[in-house]
Length: 282
Image (cartoon, rainbow, N blue to C red; front, side, top):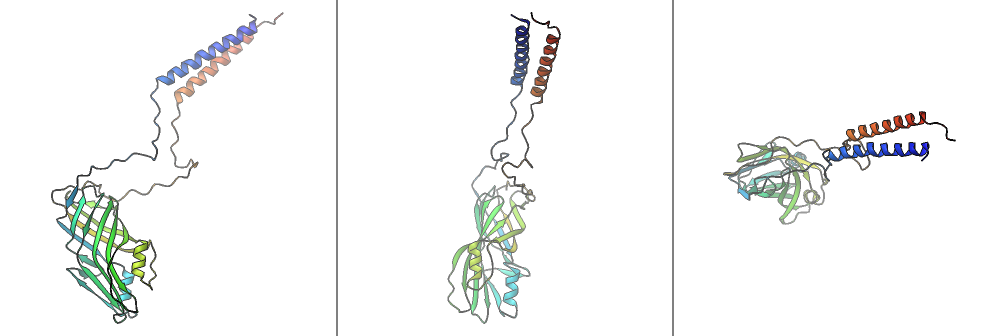
């Protein structure tokens, strides 16, 4: 074997030994944590069936602009409440809700009996809202279902139909002593069906438009609401695919990097020493 061949063999052997040690050390390290698909995992409280509502009250002003139109000089109208509903500026109050909800607010519904009859233009325009219902769809969202009937300025008979009129953001919910639940100033946004129902033929409301915020208070004897108190966390910024901004990159295995560096340095030193000690071949 020539001196050059021996040098190459020794260098290869040292490289294999050093890299093997680095890989062995890496295999002994705990596995690096990998992010789960969809981000952090969330747990939900176990559903324990629906809790019967003891007392319930709904406060909602419908829409200030609409009330101003009805009572203004153009429509020259008014509203009349029935079934226990009262009005004190700027809200109507339904005081006697009934129904049931789950302890984690992931489902259930509460109905508030009573109606409001709006009239204008000498009785040619009529709009009735009755028996609003809050339908809980998640701990942070709910729907407002109304029985609605309307006639345009041409007149006509009122025909009631249930309408999922709006979506409600209940993320700012507050719990009381555990068996009570209340929300204040929950944002209300019209659905497409709600906009059509309020518009009839001549309105100008759009889906997604903000109506008056509403408030709800419930007592649930014998139950304990399990949702968190306080307002919702701010929404996370959306990160587009391939955009590194805002993303937490994988952890760098610094031990492996260091061992690899040591291996390369050792190889270099060994090579230099062997070359210096080499004599010209004959």
